[in-house]
Length: 287
Image 1 (cartoon, rainbow, N blue to C red):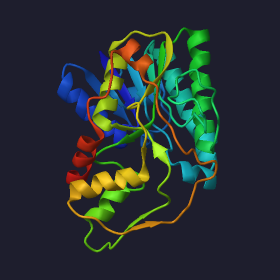
Image 2: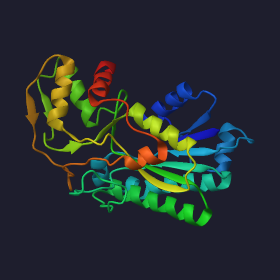
Image 3: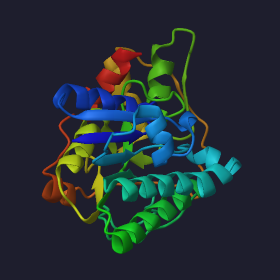
Image 4: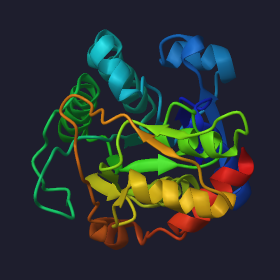
């Protein structure tokens, strides 16, 4: 099996490449960076060779910061769906299957845990762009008979994640001797965290499983507040610092999310292996 990974230089892309190399070295995988230009057959052949046939594409490339999407909506509303369209056209030309990574499509629902039938609620330009891309995937699956699996991870974390994100930001403040406090937007928002290696395994199983079109949640099935994350990381660090809660909430803030992962268990035979305390320890020690 030959795999193309778009966005291979990002947090997930790097970890996925490493994961595939370790667990299934006979896989041939290639990384596509946006600096190569538009993903099409011509550019791909120029980069990697004329006779290369791709069997699977994992589409990770895209702009990924929700707050930034409010400030600069164009890359999220236009560029992200266009990148997905490029990936779909490439798959169509290569007769390849697509695994697309989507997220943040569920709003403030009272139906917890959230299954894949929960109505989509577009709460940011980021989520709007992701839903547009999902719609394109469905159209290509229905009309071009392109096999597509959409994975909807909840909150991925782990070593190497951009310090912009909450968990590495808290861990760095704890580990930095020059920082005398832990400053966070608020303590109340709750998220369902899934460790990066567990998510890479879900992608790997998606590559091995023949699905026509499926949307599958990937999470832990448990939500944890920012306050509890700070407590967990403080215990790992072996010390505490004063907490400064700025009482800030993003526009259309989602207060609590929990993934229903029954479909992932059924379709992919997947469930998370890494506990939150283990994952946070790996994150902290890698800093």
